[in-house]
Structure formats: C-alpha cells, structure tokens
Amino acid sequence: MATGRTHRPATRSRGIPEATVARLPLYLRALTALSERSVPTVSSEELAAAAGVNSAKLRKDFSYLGSYGTRGVGYDVEYLVYQISRELGLTQDWPVVIVGIGNLGAALANYGGFASRGFRVAALIDADPAMAGKPVAGLPVRHTDELESIITENGVSIGVIATPAGAAQQVCDRLVAAGVTSILNFAPTVLSVPEGVDVRKVDLSIELQILAFHEQRKAGEESMPSAGQPRAEVRAPEGGKGPDGEIPAVMPA
Amino acid sequence: MATGRTHRPATRSRGIPEATVARLPLYLRALTALSERSVPTVSSEELAAAAGVNSAKLRKDFSYLGSYGTRGVGYDVEYLVYQISRELGLTQDWPVVIVGIGNLGAALANYGGFASRGFRVAALIDADPAMAGKPVAGLPVRHTDELESIITENGVSIGVIATPAGAAQQVCDRLVAAGVTSILNFAPTVLSVPEGVDVRKVDLSIELQILAFHEQRKAGEESMPSAGQPRAEVRAPEGGKGPDGEIPAVMPA
DNA sequence: CGATGTGAATCGGTTCACAGCG
DNA sequence: CGCTGTGAACCGATTCACATCG
Image 1 (tube, rainbow over the protein chains, first blue to last red):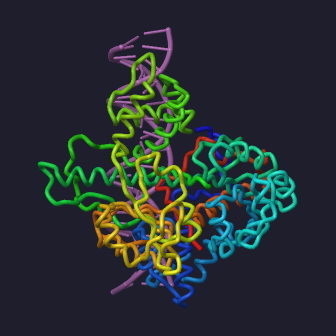
Image 2: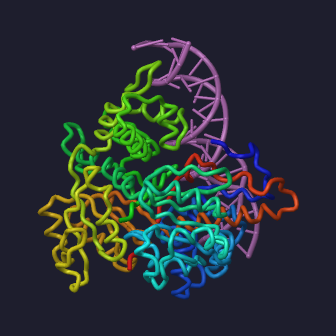
C-alpha cells in the first residue's frame, strides 16, 4: 500500500474516513438545492433521501465533522453548506488545467459544475499545433510547450488529463514535475506518480463493463430453473456503489 | 441498503464480491495489453503492477473465478482474457443508447473503448429537434419521441444518460419503462429507479471536490508547526480509491 | 523451487439501537 | 417528545503468511 508514514502524524483529530469524504460532495449538492429553495432546516432523514444514502450513515458522516445539528430539530441548511464547503476546501479558488482538448476535454471545459464549486479552468492545453489559439468554452487552447509555464504562473495544483492513453503518462510526468499534486485521469491507463501526488480516475468503459456483469446475471437468473421472480436481488436504488469503487476513464477523440 | 431479497438465492456459488467485479475490467485491460505484445504468461506480481493493485488482492480476486493459474509459473494470458471476458459478459453483444447528445454525449459516442468491449451504440437520442438527423460519430441523432421504439426494437438493456440534471429523472423513467435495466448516469442527480434496475454514476465535479479536500490537507500540513516533511501521508500511487467509491457525473452542454 | 491459492487476522465501513439533549 | 450523535455489533474487503503443488 505504501502509505508513506506508517502511522500518520495524526494531524490533530482530523480523522475523516475516505468513504465519508467521498460522500460530502453528495450532501453538498443536496444541501445547495435545498438552499436555493430557501429551506431553512432539514432532518437527517430528509437530507439522506435527497442525497441517496441512509440516514444513519449520514449522521455518522456528519459526526466526524462535528456536532452541527440540533437535537429534536435537524440541521441548519446554510450553516451546513458552509461547513462542508470549508471542509472540502471549496471556500478557496482552485485553478485547474485540462490537458487534451478532444471531444471529452471540450466537454469538460464546458462543464458548468466547475465555477460553481470554486474550480477555475486556468487553461486548456493540447498537443495539436492546429488547435492552438482556437477558442473552446471561451478560452484559447494553448500548446503543450507552454504547459510548465502555465502551471507555474497560475499556481495550478490540480490537473485533468483527457488525452489518449498513450500520452497520459508523459503528460502526467510533466504536470507533476511542474508542481501539480492532484490529478484527475480520464485516460484508460494506470498512472504512476511519486508519493504525495493524488490520482483519481474515471473510466467509462469500466463502468459499462460492471453494468454488463450485473446485466448478464439478471438475464441468467430469469431463465434459471430455480429462480422465482424475473428480477430480484440486484442493486438497490440507494445509489450505493461497489466499495473501493475504482473509477475509470473516458478516452477523448 | 434494501437488497431486495434478504438472503439472495445463492445462484450456485456465484459469490463474486462487488469489489472484485469492479477490478475485473482493470485486469482485463492490462491483460489485453500483454496479449497484444504476445506475452504468453504473467505472474500475479507482474499483472498486479500493470493493473495498479497489489498481488495478494489480485490472487484473491482470481480465486473467486476459479483456479486459472499454474503454481510456480503464473497465468496464461489468453486464457485469462477469455475467462474474465466471459465472467463480465463481454462475449456477447450489448446494444446501448446514449441519451443527451451535448458535448459529453458526443464525446461518449466517439469513445473507442466501446466496440472493443462488446458494446455497440445502437442509437444517439436527443430532445432538441434541431439535432435530429445530424450525424454524430457516424450515427444520425434520433429524437426523444423515438426512445421507446428504439429500445424495444434493438433490445437495449443498457442506457447512458448524458442530459442536463433537470431532464435525467424523466429520461430515466422512460428508459426503465421501455425495458432498460442498467443505467450509467452522468447527470449530477440522484436517480430513483425500481428494484432490479442497476444504476452507476459518474460525476466529475465530485471527483474534483475529493481532490480538493486532499489538496487542502497537503497545503495545511506543509505549514504545520509540527509536521516533518512537506508532503508525507497522502494517497499512494497504488491507485486505491475510497471505498464505496461514489462515482459522480459530468454535465453536458 | 517458485508462484499460486487460501485460511486466518485485520481493517475500515455500515448498520443498529439507544442514550442524550434541545 | 423527536431527532441527533455515537458506542457496539456486524459485515465485507484487504492483507498476511504459509501450505500446496506444478
């Protein structure tokens, strides 16, 4: 596993479980929706339903952040939005670069969920000289040659890789060398990075394969000599996802 | 969690853990690469490195599928590719529809990783009448009115939703009513579906927020009175991901 | 001998159920 | 009285370490 230190410096009591961190954005989204409808407070039950989890899990998650609720009443929406935002680090500005402006890169550049969450697309970068200068989502595409200077000048610490698989590791190396310490990888490759660099991946193909697995199972069960109903025992609406939940990648043009 | 049945019919000994299923596509990808380089066999150690996991986990995973290795030698690449493909249900053809042909939908339509894995884009569907007939990735975009007939005629059981958040639930309902039982959701909404329908989601914004959380932590540690080295204790290259690994969604144009 | 396959130990996360408090 | 907050039980997944066998 290589966890760096074996024991972790125990940065105060900051022991928020990874699984909880992964759900905070979900709660935040639900809370934001409530906030827009001017709902003042929510119970764990209601919020849980809106976020697609169960209430016990939600309460436990919030308990790691502190006691932000009021017994007998619920949670103050605005206050919770603030607390979660702060915890996630969304109260500050995060400049990001997107490398690889193919179909996917362009889709990401146009994605509205960025700005609203404290993320700012500092630059779009592509290796194709023909792309250079072309405006995508209101930003001119810059050439890969400028990668290092863009990172440095804008203090970018988060990079998004949306290049073909073959170019991903190389791009990753350059991003890291230039100072990026968090990478969101859409290319279908395993990136190797030095310790201290965080990588998350999204791979559409993998998601589909997992669906196919379950789909096959359903089909099999239907025509099973034993099996009762056509489709029972599958994944519940809850929205749960396999543990460890590897996320995989989409490949651009 | 609402697992439908409480005990599961125990479809023979088919007890492959969800976490293992989620990694099979990863192994498959690595194996395919080896196969293309005509490598005949691999050890658990080598394959694990290529897939970004540790070897004990990989061996345990494979043990759920059966004993496909040879002690003292390793695994036969071709044989394993076949076994995993079969297990995942990739030896059959899976027609899929993509609903919502914005930036993201187009990117998905152009994604090459589909065909190579047994997935076939049966149709691209969009609600905008102006899009109808326009060719995207070689296929003419069809209007939402045709959704039901397309699903039925092509026997589609897997649907991909790449619409704006507001339209997602409605599209989902129609897909399900028409017979779709697996959905890959890219819209940033919690979809509610009847039991027996599988939903997985991909949300870019959530992934970025998780990165921001860790990024913030790194920054904090650096200037910590106590903390030793600048950056220790973060996520290792291993590629691990938070359990439960909620996957989030990208929003199209 | 070397690498697989797997019980047993361990770990992290989820769920339960209820004490605590506004 | 109702809902939060949480210890404890539970459960699945990961890791360890070694017996097994080609």
